[in-house]
Amino acid sequence: MKDYYRVLGIPRNATDDDIKRAYRRLAREHHPDSAGHNGDEERFKEVSQAYEVLSNADKRALYDRGVDPNSRGGSAGFGFEDIFETFFGGGGSRRGPVSRKQRGGDLLLHVDVSLEEAVFGVARDVQVNAADVCATCGGSCCTPGTAPVMCRNCGGKGSVQRVARSLLGQVMTTAPCPSCGGFGTTIESPCTECSGQGRTHSRHTITVDIPAGVETGTRIRLQGYGDAGVGGGSSGDLYVEIREQAHKVFERQGDDLHCTLEIPMTAAALGTVMKVDTVDGPREVNIRPGTQPGETTRLKGLGVGHLQRTGRGDLFVHIDVETPTALTPEQEELVKRLAVLRGEDFPEAKLAPANAGLFSRLRDAFTGR
Ligand SMILES: [Zn+2]
Ligand SMILES: [Zn+2]
Image (cartoon, rainbow, N blue to C red):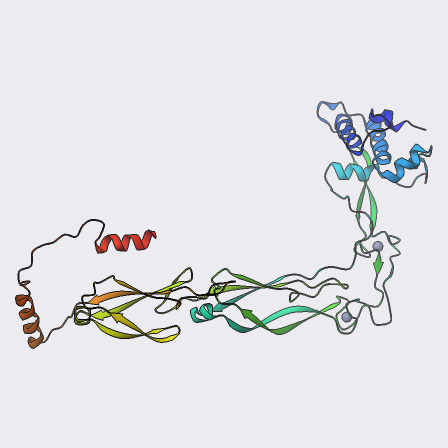
């Protein structure tokens, strides 16, 4: 019986990590393709056999009791090639048949909401194409009364081994069984309703509770409303992603709303009360006598509802003063008289301080200062 510990150059109490490290080093050193042409196929095979046994707890225990697992079964592939695959590409560390049970896929749906819907929240019916568990076979994929049978091609292992020629000589690779697709079982009599898929597709209408405060990019997760799983697997989730449509007059910044109210010059000078249509209906906005362009009135709590907490943002009404145009001769006469009365018939140029004028207010609004 070969001394696998000596082959790998490790003590009998070596840990799994020691074994792996020793194998990696030796395999690289003796790899027949290795740079420098120092490769040694026989030595490489020996190292791989040793690793095959010592890296597997069951086989190692057997070996320590005096039985060489590699000498059993004679010509049956002892699997060093599988390790080769694991370490040098291929990555086929999967063993045994794969389960037919699979979680259903997640679905993503886009929903357009108006600003008003984002402000207050809305219950929205959406149409979604999702997979359902087949009502006829209950997801088993088999005609009722039948069950999957063991695959004759792979004997239920789900994988088959293929021999390929390479510089190493014969190399065995493991591939999913082509007959059963890796499941280890085949379905002799597929359900006719779902063509053996275990699922059927249909269009559902789902009512989505869209909370106040959503905005473009907000995703709402509806657990279990995605595709049904396969073979009894759990359902996926449905994600509803919000796209908020622009509003004609209100602009949103966070949970605050902004609008611009255009008032006549006379109203700005004399002051008045105006009815403004907010998202909550008409509200009175007080215009004080002598209101300047760019002044802002804040209406508390008339903004967007906060997402996941109570309360709402505010509505900011920005005042714009309209200068009268197309004056009738009589109006022109009146304005001229007013100018004379106010000593403004030949006004002097007056520059506002750099940080107090309209320009800096506009700039601050853009840069968010
Ligand atoms: Zn079915
Ligand atoms: Zn098979």
